[in-house]
Image 1 (cartoon, chains in turn cyan, blue):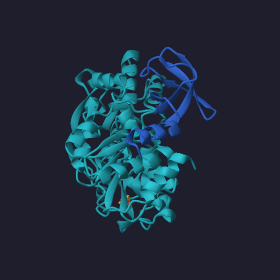
Image 2 (tube, protein in one colour):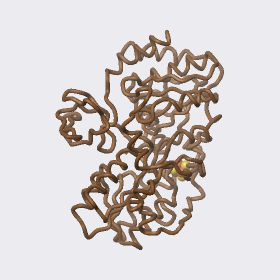
Image 3 (cartoon, protein in one colour):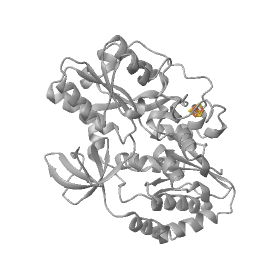
Image 4 (cartoon, protein in one colour):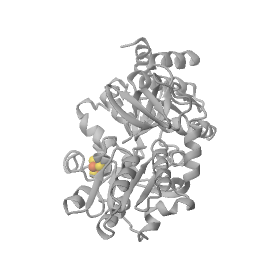
Length: 351
Length: 70
Ligand code: SF4
């Protein structure tokens, strides 16, 4: 254990002020905090809650239904990050659709999907484009590449999300947010400062033990002062201005739109869709997809989990009917989902 | 899909970089970063190098805590 972790641990374990709620927004943070055993250090008056920062978890049921529609009705070859394959749709997930004969192929990056389209000119290839600002640039690069190559058989089904307005929606659910480092690496910190002016506090954190402990200790110290705050605790990767190139790229290819979040409902200007100039690559336009209203399993409490209103273990289905192998909700499927983190690291839960 | 992969740049060529992440080598898109050179460390997401990593986490932790005097 290094000196910083020790100092941070003393601050965290020594906290004896009023009860505070800190929300780690990012699913990777949720998992790392569990894996490193940080939860077991927390005194009773520090409540760490998980937020909506896993793109797979906030993707609504209807999106999976749209993908299955394209596979079944339009005979498309669906390419996707592997995490989405088991996310439940209204009637089935992509794994079941594949077992029934649909063409579903996991890829590591959107570029791989473009490559599949290039190599298979007779296939209509669709990439399921999910992700926050961290992943959206990779979809934009892929669309530009497909356009440069003149590909007519490639398009993306977008469910890309933009974080800033989601934080506003979550205002009041926690005393402070742990912001996802790699979103800020792209967007920069300006919106966090604006949030601070609106009374929303938070710190940007990295992903190592030292970084997470530092971020928590700084949060506690700043909360003690009682003023709204923002601190960048991940300056080795996050620059204040973010990535100008990535911002320009997203601006060129996509624009903000209102979008639905699983559990949070529709949030104004919190989604990203392709601009008109790229509409040939927009699966919804290309295949004229009808409006599909997905129906989540009524027993699943993902929506409340994603807003920090309840813990996964408060869900009656948790660990009984809903497990990673037989997931009822998206939060149990994704490796970054809060329910899967609670399930996987169950033994270390003490608060 | 969201887990960032820290990696060392082995070579850079025309918007593409070969990176080494714990011994595994792969091509990634590098056009979002200027002045990338072999030996630099980058954070990779979905096949794209999204940011340079400028120091180690202990140096960073000392800096952050130092500025706040905690
Ligand atoms: S345990 Fe399963 S059913 Fe319950 S909220 Fe989590 S994902 Fe939904």
